[in-house]
Length: 94
Image (cartoon, rainbow, N blue to C red; front, side, top):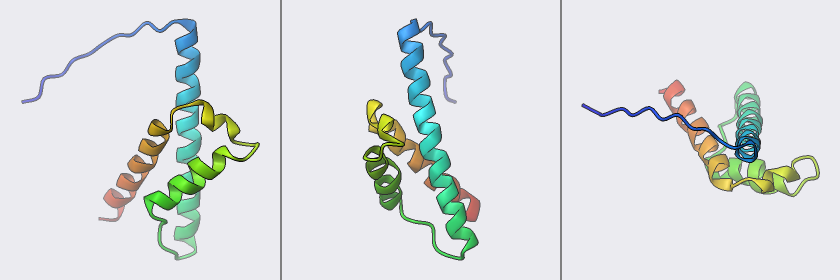
């Protein structure tokens, strides 16, 4: 049996702002990657591997004017969102 703990946090206004920015960035990377994967699926192509998605939607996206704000947050949660997307696809197609 696993123990479960519930914690309540009380972030400061600055922490709330940074958390909102982080969660928004994760959402944008997830949605962009999901749209790309769905488009490839409709065209009958294979889903890109995780490293290709990271390169396209994190590394290269940070270099564009439109998404340069992605470099203001840690890359680790962004990478984890792509790992989660990959796992969701594996679960769906198995």
